[in-house]
Image (cartoon, rainbow, N blue to C red; front, side):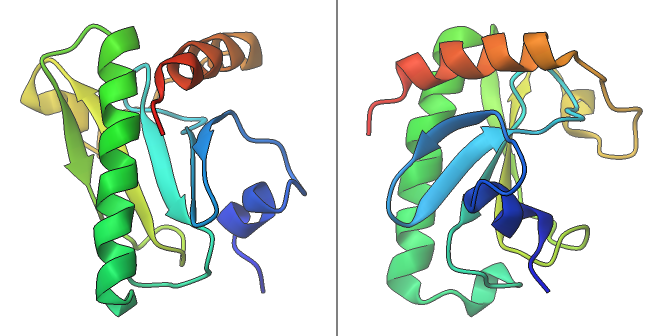
Length: 132
């Protein structure tokens, strides 16, 4: 069965996409920890990040870096935190979270519920800053 991320990749369900190439897709988390929280996913459906081929893992991080730098240009923050948890959706994904303090990347805290309009606006701004 396809994961929710596969459905976003295939455009079967909407996603607020900020960047894409032949191997990866980056989009906003719809229930972010903070404004600008993005997910970077592999287009190839792999469950566990350490099951990626070495070159694919390296490319995932390079792509994530480009998205993170774009987020920094849009969302005021001290840096971008990176988290790979991988338990909630069985599909490789990297969380990119704008940080101003350690609690910004606390996954046990309540999530934000931005409107679709807010998400679309943030996604458009980040997308304009991605240098692929």
